Image (tube, rainbow, N blue to C red; front, side, top):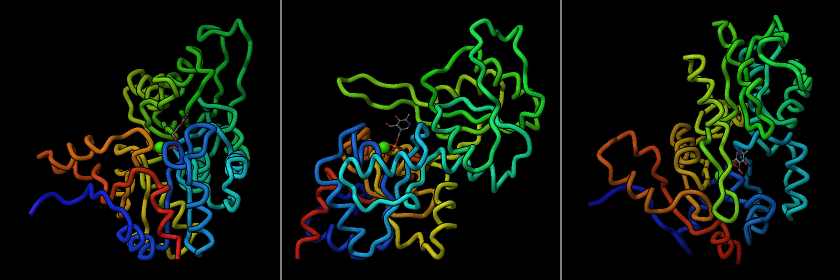
Length: 304
Ligand code: PLP
Ligand code: CA
């Protein structure tokens, strides 16, 4: 008798789980690295899984870099076996969504970093040029006539003018409203935080009276992208490893994957237990199946 989930596992249980699964999905920040620092032992774990013939992919809501940059970052941090086709970022998946799902005709107005635009351009999706005219205001600027989607991602150069333009484009009910992710905030070192793109999307949702379609975790679209590139992936064979209950664990639950929380990132085990003990059945989707302190806890399982 008791509650299912939140099982802290070690030793032989980890070994058993790693043997049972053949497809591993790793969130990046908080699981694999903290910003520019790899989590101790993470590179060894990832390299060992790949060498054992396991499928390993990375699912990150960080939309600020194109996939090529992630390959470089993995290599730089000692993850020597990671290749482009293993990386599923919210910017890459947004480009696939615009190109293959909605088959957008016309331009996309992007709130986001240069890396997001680069990913869209690589997929052949035209973006509205950014003007850097310092005198431009919403009263005097030009609006593009053929904007068919507004895409909101993390933007460290957000301006009121960008929000105002996006609000105007969203008046057109035929203009889609997409968000790379809905993350509320991200931890920085020293107790500081960074507002996430969810906070920017929220501003536009209020201004437009509309709801954005979210591409990144916890939406299943990222898993659809993975399934279409790794044909025959069986959700029952997958383990989703992440550090945030509201994105990673919910994503795993939404896609029918077993989930594992690592305690190297945002969420604490107490929060998972609160969701588990709550009377609201919808809260169960946030509860990880398994919990480890760090993915370095996998290492003994690779010793013969
Ligand atoms: N978006 C931005 C801008 C970030 O800085 C981060 C984490 O640092 C994320 C998203 C979350 O990334 P992940 O899904 O890999 O945890
Ligand atoms: Ca994370």
